[in-house]
Amino acid sequence: MEETSMGKLSICRQNVPMKSMPSRLPKIDQAGVARRLEALRDALGLDKGEFAQSFGLDPSSYSKVLQGKKPLKSEYGHAIAEGWGVSMDFIYRGDMSRIDETLRTKVMQNLTAPMR
Image (cartoon, rainbow, N blue to C red; front, side, top):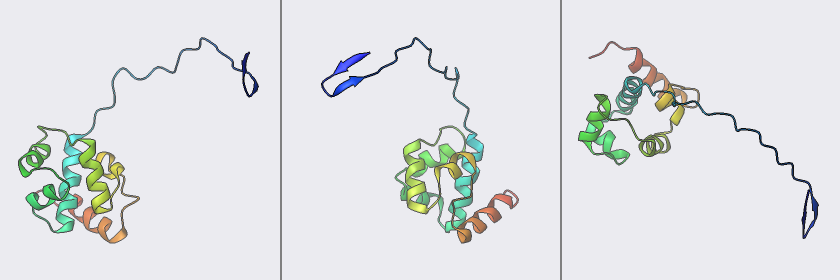
């Protein structure tokens, strides 16, 4: 036990190892991220350049994200989520539960449409 100026404070110090973290973080499905971004972009009626600029990414970097050559950084994912009313769970994992129903319907149509 340790004494503090506020009275007695009981602190239990055990040598218990912290839960080990996985040696590798789960791999993000970059192709899925690209599909969802394009479905969202289409639902919003924006071209690729307009969409990229709406969250601060230059169009050529956006193209690299779509091609899987570059991951979508979390700060851009956050900007998309905040700016367009979707969640980061949608962008990175495909969870559509927190998207407005009208937008969700359009995004779903785009996700299930044949590739162009």
